[in-house]
Image (tube, rainbow, N blue to C red):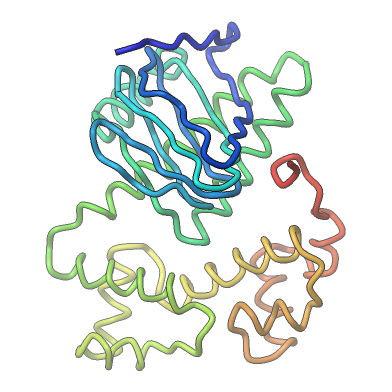
Length: 277
């Protein structure tokens, strides 16, 4: 199998954009370092260690060293590639997260809340990589470690085996897929055939917050994306993410983000480097 070399800077971390035209094929190869592929736009297929998976927006692929992979672009496909040498990380990150949590390559389909967090961290890394001061290398390492922590926690959720954990994860996935609908703990309880109190208890035990709090987090995360990446009216954003009225949306958004929706939009106007091209 062909080994493709990626030349890393001294800090051991490199973030770059990879664009592929419709039908473009990246031949099967492997690397000697870790890679994270984040789909910005378009669609395609990745063959990873002999298994085929879809590439689509907000899907992330963690590729470990010497893992065979190839890519087929089915439409214009834009990826962010985060290449890094595990030895440049803190020992605890290398051993406790990379070695233990990700001994093999993995594909992660992120919920809206997690996708927003990852995008924001990648934005920060692009900023740090494009500037030069004495703290850039440290900042890049910190943001990379935050991404790996998010992925590790996502992996933990994926391997829940106890009955309450499975129910809690099913509730989480239901909220991820229906956040724009009117959802209450009672409705979730009816779907799960358990009491509303039990719904709250098992979800909080597993994730540290109630289903209602998680629902608000997901809605606000999607709203932040719409505000920064589209020119949709505030009332349209409010409706699209599932809030019943604008005052409730404003109150929830300001409590979470510490800014009003209008001020957040002004500070995060569309056109930042991750949404170009």
